Length: 234
Image (cartoon, rainbow, N blue to C red; front, side, top):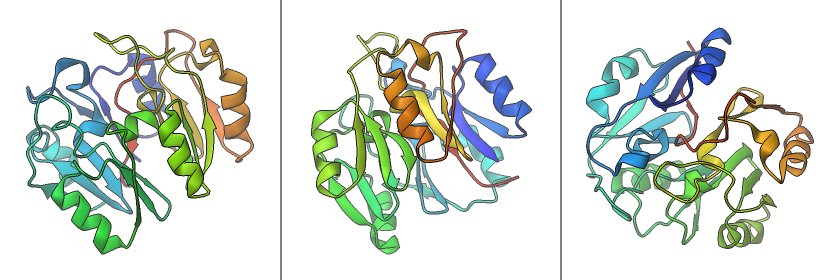
């Protein structure tokens, strides 16, 4: 499977994914958004169905990987800006038949794809939507954002509300657990030591109840790297 993740991801995580047989495509800084999120995959990519929506600013850095990608992709026209809300245009989530984002700022090509796909839109205030959500399966998420949790629960989405913080993001008081995670096959991978999180047991039980495994790395603290996003199979 092709995996898109930050060039700043820990080498232990990269090695683990490679040893599992995956091919990595590292997202590189391109001088568009502020440094703390400048190599975050969820700033430049959004997966809708079996298609990748790609921000044009990142495309030159990953075009070779995309040329080998079995999953189709769309090169989007909207320009990203350095600060919020101009940097959140692709930081959205498809969850089963739902599309979740602050739709006032969604990239036009991304929204067009959502409409073509027939997804039900759940508009939320949290612009860093993907960062804020650990996507467990098509009906289940984990978040520390209370407003986001309320919006999802109204739509019958199983939501585990956890504590704020406990995830590093350089230059900020804390990052998001969604940005420190990603689903790869039947495992939810966390970038760092999930066992240090105060809600570790609740998180682990929530995931394992859905017949998925939890993978984390005790060698370093949880760090927001802008999610782990999967592409097509090799």
